[in-house]
Length: 235
Length: 290
Image (cartoon, rainbow over all chains, first blue to last red; front, side, top):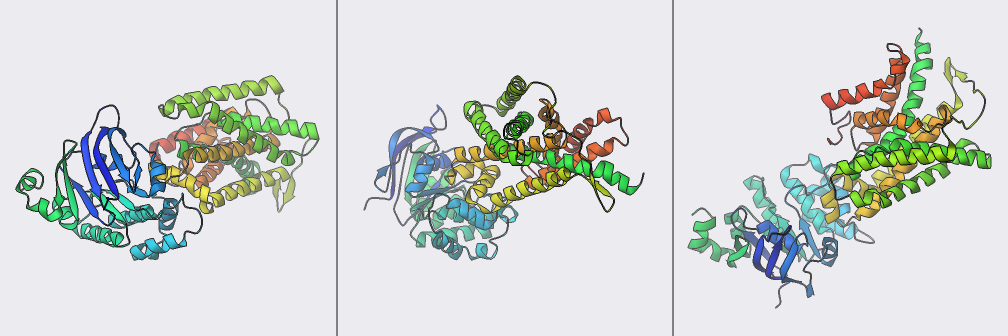
């Protein structure tokens, strides 16, 4: 079966200098795939390259049969990939409901099915739909951010360090939400600092270092790999 | 001095002047929030609006209030045009470049107004208007409808921002521009909408200043400082704040005559601006810090 997303040997960066020197990542249509690696390995950059936020100078990115290399982000959004940035990923001075509405900005017609789907995933948000998003706790904000991204019914959700700055309790909650989202038929590619926990939770993982693929495998395989453990996971 | 005298001679004129400032300040605050620069041609756009209304009033012989929509639409179109021809090309450059460019635009607009209409003071209607007295309050009709129209226009704008899809898109762009772009909101349309609103409100502010005082080529420029003071006092990005700020600055300017020589009236706005920037830069209603 061909994967939903297939990055092959992608090279590029934000300006003239390359940060990615050949990254290849596959995500199947029902998978949770995590990218881990040391600081400065190009994890977030690799993910942003999928979303058209970089200048790419080589390689290929196939998504659902289309070559999307260097497409503009709004075209990629409409094609079925949504992206949740690590920071500033909500509209603080807008209500939860308005945040979701903005997520569906490109969608024509009735939004009620999309609202229902998101509120079913995040019942907490439904109760507080009129609350300003800026007044929520870190975990709830992350839910709003993911809910906003899910409004367009994406096939693939990109999450940039969704657990950054959250307590372990919330980390588990976010991971559980990822599983719930996947259960609705959305593939997830995420970047994580908390490598151990993330590999334990994801289906497969990629270890990047210095802008290149270093290791790949199922979460369990990578956790068991001595080299990976020594290099990135602190023994 | 009795309380009624205080109200009649200072508070009421202050609220009227404040309503005029508020209209311009709302435009300033929106441009600040969405485009993130101080637009210095705001005052001269108001002048242009006032003179366009004058042309309609003298040309068609209709009252200034009937000419107001024409002036608003015309000035909105001019604002959109200025953005397309000048500011749009500077969008990727440091904001200070656009601020300076807007100063140049201000001088250009004023020069065009002076070439077409001259430098003498004009008025929409000749003759003296006597105020009516209601329960001891001396109010002119034009003062009532200045305040009412300001509330009507700003109320309509607030409803638009709260309820409509594009109004929400404007708020989203002001709140988090990157996320708004990631959500697929068309930045160019939001910018155009911002100029239509700012230009239209500018014209209204100029027309009402003309109705209550006189129409001259420096009228808008002289309002620029109080309008900025009002926008910052209310909190940048806050429409209701700009109205509150406008009213406070207007009343403060009128009251300052009690303690200062009247030539220093304009300095009041500057004092308020300076004080707010030092003490509470987010403004009364917690706006953005720029």
